Length: 130
Image (tube, rainbow, N blue to C red; front, side, top):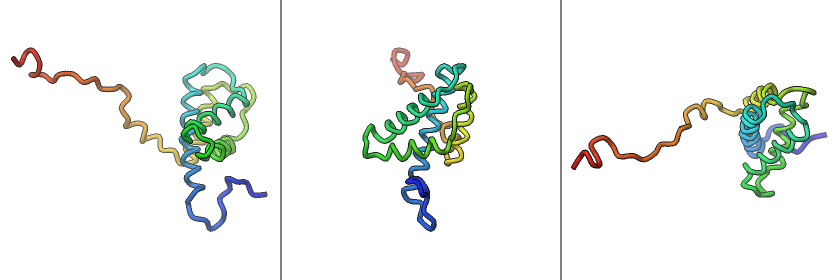
C-alpha cells in the first residue's frame, strides 16, 4: 500500500522533494540536539519521535498547515528503528547519515558565522582620531 510520503512514479520533484529537503533539515537539527544535550544517555524511542515532531513543527512555522506532519513521518521513516540501549551521541551519527541521505548539505553550515560580530570603532576612529 502506498504511503503519503512515497514518490509517485513519473512525478516531478515537486512536493516530495520539498518534504525531503525539510526532513533533511529537521534531522540535521535533531542530530545536533542528540549530540549536545545529554549525549551519554540512552535514546528513548518515544522521546526521539517527539523531538523529530517538535523540530518539524517549528520548521513548519509552528502551524499545522506547514506540512510538518508529512515531514516528521518522512524523517522518522528514513531513520528507522531506534536500537535498544544506544546512546544519544552514537545515534546522532545515524540521524546525521539519514539527513545526508535526504540531501542535507553539511558544507553549507561550515560557512556560517558562529561568533557574532560586535560593532566596534575601527582603528583611527574614536578618541585617538581627534
